[in-house]
Image 1 (cartoon, rainbow, N blue to C red):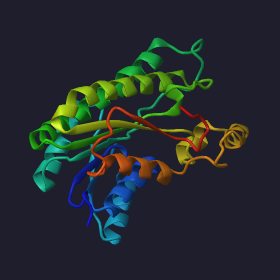
Image 2: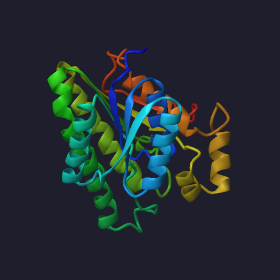
Image 3: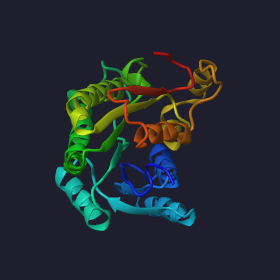
Image 4: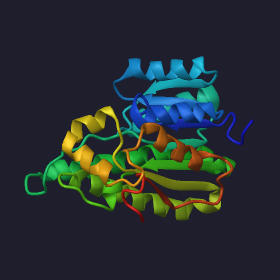
Length: 251
């Protein structure tokens, strides 16, 4: 039995990649996990089935996290089934343009900023009342190393996630007295289906060569860092960012 047994964790964007890995790790540590998804219902149900087959508890719930009303309905469904959310892992990836600033429209840059913060705002607002009422909560946002180390074509993602990191620090300051910790996990490049769409082979080889640990991250590497922040025992870290990049960048 651990300090997380029975806690309710909501993982947004959990049908694949880092989100799915995080759902599995948290469930293995005794949490009841809500696998949020937008369109990949079958994949989300497969994550739930895998968790249940391993002896864990999970449910899949559809919601567009950019829409406050949809998020409220999701959290209400969770509340009815299991009670309030104890752990929020906001991982859902909002689509973004990969191009230079010169070629980018304001709709592409400003739209990504707006959607990124709108989603973080909506999910945090929805879960916070239960956390503050019980005087305990864990919030973990997924950031990116691109917030601090720019890479060509990634201005929309890097800028929006930098805003998210600062948002997390302000929340950490405000919510600390209420027993709620707020932290960020910032992966470097991760081996995943999404990475395959963004990284060509030459870029992947360069990044691997620049990583002291000799490989890119796996989703499970990131999930374990999230689980560290989510644990009840980790009660005195807030407002921090964990870089999960194998030493590619050292802060």
